[in-house]
Length: 113
Image 1 (cartoon, rainbow, N blue to C red):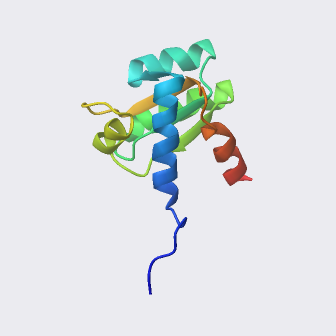
Image 2 (cartoon, one colour; image 1 turned 45 degrees about the vertical axis):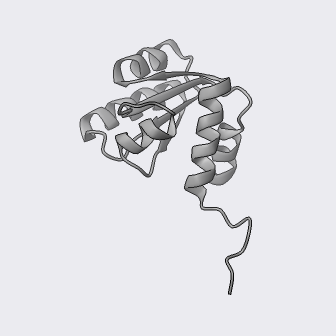
Image 3 (tube, rainbow, N blue to C red; image 1 turned 90 degrees about the horizontal axis):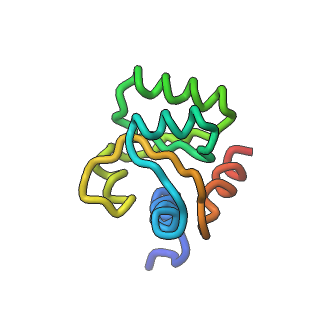
């Protein structure tokens, strides 16, 4: 029985939306710049790799709670997140300030409801 077409995993769709954000939107990569973006209130979405240290993760989640920003826990580690962003280095945290042409924020809000 051949596999059904159009039956994508949610991770693949998320990676393609993330690639579109990196191409058309504005992002900040890294822990320090993510905290700066959160403190200034410009962040719309925070993406954390699954191997982010617990202390960093809880600190970013706390700042996100105060600024009412969405936090998404990426299913892969920081190497996979860096690759999904189209970078050749590891990315542990990522803040999206402008999603551009992507509907990544709308899809996450719709999935959580």
